[in-house]
Image (cartoon, rainbow, N blue to C red; front, side, top):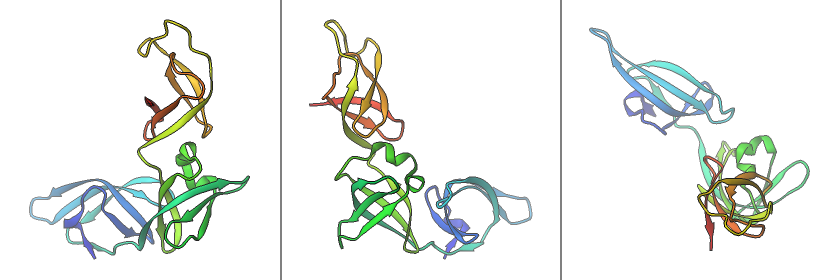
Length: 186
């Protein structure tokens, strides 16, 4: 059981029949009365974020969550297919289940998939991924790394802004949190 005194950012609790993550919390002590803990919670299944308050000393159960490292294999028209690295079972996920993570997937990439009571609910890609540029305008002599940017289509299908000196075939590192170019990979 998780008590309100153990609330911290990132703690996961079972609340209203679903797993939730505490994004933020504030402890308020009222004069003579008991403490009130105001929280910002994220529903891990729907992704919705909301505020709620709890009395000091309330207890919550820990959700039945399991994180597995899986390898991305391929996608067909309806699903993205992943393979568990330990038992080689394949798990298909819909584009809705992947959310923003699908923009950064490339074959054989390892990702972390969060399971709740045996069902996949979230996919976490690495913080930085390396993707090749498959289409962009050509660079010209005199283009510099700090002189501006141009759009580039990457092998995963995402388009990002890159410096003018980069060309098709170059491999670049992308920050998956912001979808921004970081550097060229040698």
